[in-house]
Length: 333
Length: 123
Image 1 (tube, helix red, strand yellow):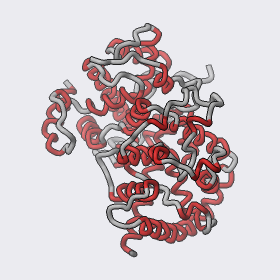
Image 2 (cartoon, chains in turn red, green; image 1 turned 90 degrees about the vertical axis):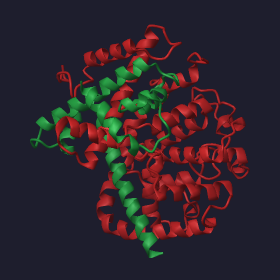
Image 3 (cartoon, one colour; image 1 turned 135 degrees about the vertical axis):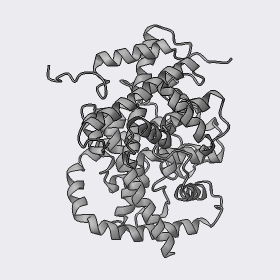
């Protein structure tokens, strides 16, 4: 049937200790700092690519446009320039990878999810740096379609617009409605609106932002590492990453389930929370099952039910099933 | 027996799903397609076994149900509040940070959409 044996590269997804990437480390740190990322750090990221690619940045080939990017003209050749062993994966032949424009847009949009909240803050605080380079680059502010919150079955016109903006500027093609110029004016409008809101909440924001400034250093490092990692992915890995990021339980089904079981109709945020929890739980279960399978050295086939069951009991033993099952052991003893 | 309820529910709601024609089995269970994608995303093969999906789905649905049951017993009776969820999750760092992240993202999305609507109206 053409099932390939499991090979190293996408095993790297689950090599949690070696890569800073996967679920446990990056995600939790990401979450904690997501709401308070300082815009200036991000603007720096936009303006100056993290790698010394001064001359190369301008010679961004069309292939590099197809590559996953966080900022314009940045790091097209990360694959070749980074041999510092930061990524365990050998730099794949990323230049040979051909991606259709739609896929790249989606992926680009998807990938910028990592910096979405920071982009949003970038938009809000852009009043500080009116002539910052960022003003010219219509980076996707928020792309709802990219977030696991709002998967592909909920495209909003906002995300459409964001995708079109992206297409306009990075591929040099005219968008369906307007020239890129219109997009840029839209950005200015957004910024015009943004200052008004940020003025209102500025005092609080400053209080919040100040103590977190130190954290953003490692936050940025984290993001850069992510960028590097993702830009080195092969097609297979990108597919897998996309599946990981985009998969989510449908809110309608979850709401229905909760209603059936409890008779209470839950609020929207509750449904979002539970959907996210279910996904994290499923992820823990699957990863544990894959570990069991690896230990039993049966890695040539897909997971079997007995692996899953084994994983479930193993999680139980570790006390990770706590809500809703299992007793809460005192963490001090 | 719990899956019986789900089967009826999902059959009735089938027209609402605007997705590509699903396989026959997928119509009968709540989370088949999503679980398939998740399995792939978390490291399994592209085409998982059916039995694996069944087991996984049963476990996840059970998890959700137990979570809701606990949430009901905590805090306000007969209601599921966000605070209850936070309370139940607080020991699990990964999950609690994920929930916080999701909720803050949804807030930002709402704000952004509101701004977008305003700019649209102003234009």
